[in-house]
Structure formats: structure tokens, C-alpha cells
Length: 47
Image (cartoon, rainbow, N blue to C red; front, side, top):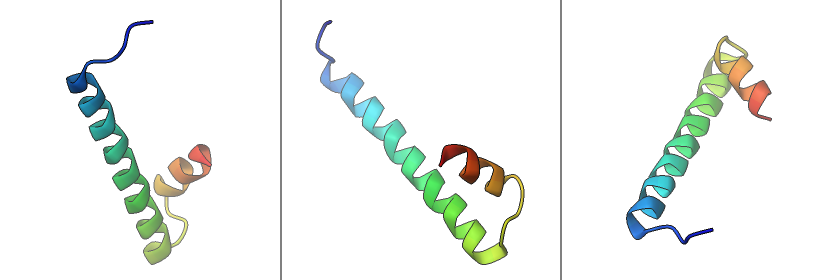
């Protein structure tokens, strides 16, 4: 397997950071509004 280029690593880290922000958003929506769809479905599926 070849090593990743720095630009490829940067894109992967950006995508991972975006996922972390999404999970934080889902968690906050559930904390504020309770178990509302589709957030509870996403949260449950990912756990």
C-alpha cells in the first residue's frame, strides 16, 4: 500500500472533523428537543 500524500491526509482529517461536528449537532438537538426524528435515528444507528 502506498503512503498518503499530505493533501489526501488533510482532506481525510477535514471529513473526520465534519463528522465530529455533525455528531455534536445531533447530540445537542437531542438534548434540547428530546428524541426527535431523524436525529434520534441517526444517533441510534451510529451508536
